[in-house]
Length: 405
Ligand SMILES: Cc1cc2nc3c(=O)[nH]c(=O)nc-3n(C[C@H](O)[C@H](O)[C@H](O)COP(=O)(O)OP(=O)(O)OC[C@H]3O[C@@H](n4cnc5c(N)ncnc54)[C@H](O)[C@@H]3O)c2cc1C
Image 1: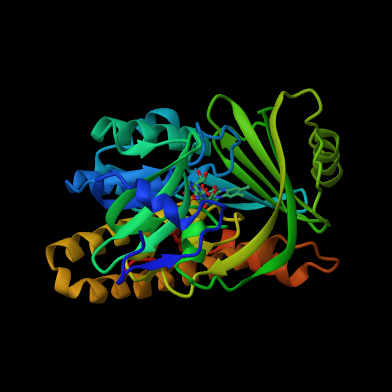
Image 2: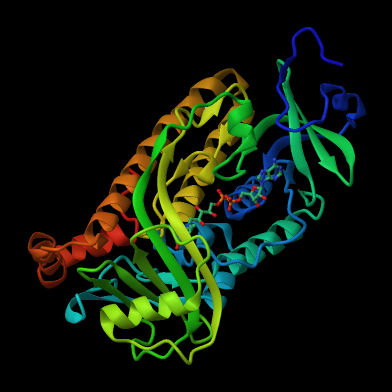
């Protein structure tokens, strides 16, 4: 029952607040809602700090649709610290250089070789493989932590903890935690329940992308075509595959490979026709930033807190950075409960600042790739970037350096 000091947050689903009467005695230090890449990473590092953690994930298994592919050096350093970097390196492919084209003419390249070693490259790995590595790690640390097919429906805030109702196999179960973390993606239930606003905007930019067997001679290099008809990006993937991302004039609801093949051929004369295609999708671009990453025993990390453009491939990596900073703050809270508000507000301020910087960088990437009838100004800037010492500065920006003080 709802106690006097308890605040019941309205349910997004149809489970009644009475569900809390089924509450078990289960209490963990932290409940994470969402077992995507950010929730799983956060769970792992909190378990390594010897806290008890529950992760509630609504899906029964990892979604095989590949979204992100780029793992940046800052994240590899975090994985190194957690002792799991080898699993990523064994499965991923190292991109050490990106070639730049203006229309279809090569103009120069950006190399990551001069970036700080040992992680002077971007690691390409499809998101589902990244999630599989993180899930295995969490299960090894604590087999009870990750609960799948568990959809969070309601939360009840008490003075010293939070009660979380979740639906599993048509039953309503409950867990109690000192803190709850929403890693439940861009439509976050947790963020809405905590009444944290998520202002932002949708950009006019739209893209179609597909993964094909690789018939280029780029090897492990990425290629970016700043074409007057619209951007084309081409990234190597493990297992001799390659991702093609192509700017479109409008959102393509039902993407087909004929369209993607045709756009690539029309702009740069490259034929994809005979190659195996394993994934096709369309996406638009948004930017959103939660007004705060923390409110009253509820914190946010990952896409629930910030959405940045996938052009530049930094959203998931930013989520891991946020999760790392949150874990540090949460650790301090449990050691010094009297100062928890101070630690978590500090986390929120610092992580929002980083997210703003990443979003600005992603906007520059999109600006460079927009369709132009008279691309002289943009082309001059692109030439400067790849053919002068500015190249090292750009390599730093592309690899997410300089974000943490
Ligand atoms: C086309 C594309 C390409 C991208 N490429 C890159 C890239 O190269 N590099 C990069 O860094 N980023 C990239 N991104 C961004 C990246 O995919 C996201 O930032 C990342 O998935 C966010 O991870 P997350 O764990 O925060 O959220 P999600 O991956 O959205 O996971 C949230 C999880 O929460 C679960 N959930 C939601 N609600 C509930 C509930 N009520 N109860 C229980 N579980 C719930 C969901 O089932 C889901 O598993 C790309 C995105 C797109 C669209």
